[in-house]
Image (tube, rainbow, N blue to C red; front, side):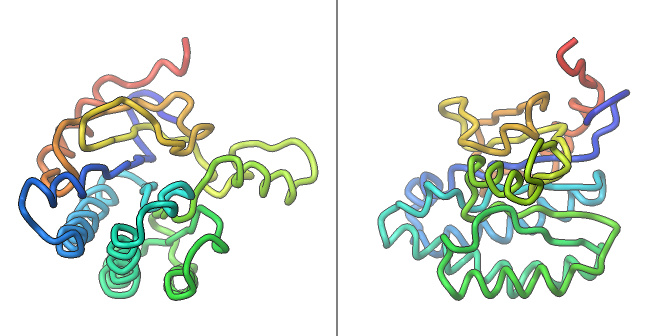
Length: 219
């Protein structure tokens, strides 16, 4: 929860990679590889400023896409988990948490995700929540099953409130089921740039603006 200008938790909805690929006449697989490199840089920039980052990588609904599109996403996200994130996690002592339902994911991605979470479970300095196969109703139902009663934010897969949400790609202003309970009082920044064009400088401008604005928490 953001108070007195302090930002602790940033959420990211990295939209626009498919449109970016089309406008740049690039193969979708190659475009998503660019996205994963951009995501790695974003996470590094973010963990230098805040304690926790949540990234919307794959919703439950995304898994209904056409096979040629979905295969490109799954392959590059698996590469991200296996080849890009581990070094960053070691550098900044980042604990990776999976938010989503494993049963929705293909075996190879589920295994890579489980491996990364296990490899980083001892790190405590920073937390990166990766939303894969995510749906908020699943998150709430799972929390209710664990607690057997009243559910609070701390019981959810992403267990803290999000201060700032950045959505790239412009277009319609929608939340896409991104952590609705955790984002109840988030500051939303909807920017026109596609995610592959989202720079560190642009992120820092947003961070500084959000910090300066603070939050009223419904008051």
